[in-house]
Image (cartoon, rainbow, N blue to C red; front, side, top):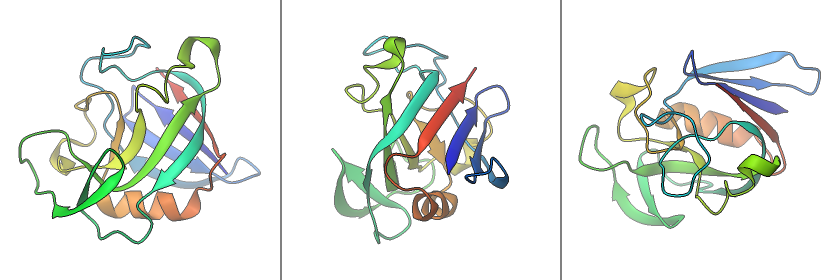
Amino acid sequence: MQIRVHIPSQTLELLDSENQLQNRYVISTSKFGIGFESGSHKTPTGNFRVAEKFGDNAPAGEVFVARVATGRMGLEGEGGDHVQTRILWLEGTDPENENTKSRYIYIHGTNWESLLGTPASHGCVRMSNAEMIDLFDKTPVGTPVEITG
């Protein structure tokens, strides 16, 4: 498996081991643009891998804080940039993005599904909660991820 995130089209593609497209999802990357600086809330580009996964069997929409399920369900459009449903924690494998894991850049579900298809996140890759479950179930730890701008 391989994940490809294309920032200009705000899409994420899941490819199988033979580079055949399995799924294409509408996503949301950072409203602050592309970048690598800590505290910038920008989405990094380059090569990554899924370092860790959190949320197996959590209900769709459950809010996570510091990767721990809270038992609270996020509501569409409520304040904040919730991390919901499932988390794929990314680790950069290029010199310029090696701080990605310490920046807490994830692929995760969101309470802002209405903004998918537009840059609106605080650096992470947001997905619909239902599609996040689908991607999570198909993606093992170690899966390569490419984010292009």
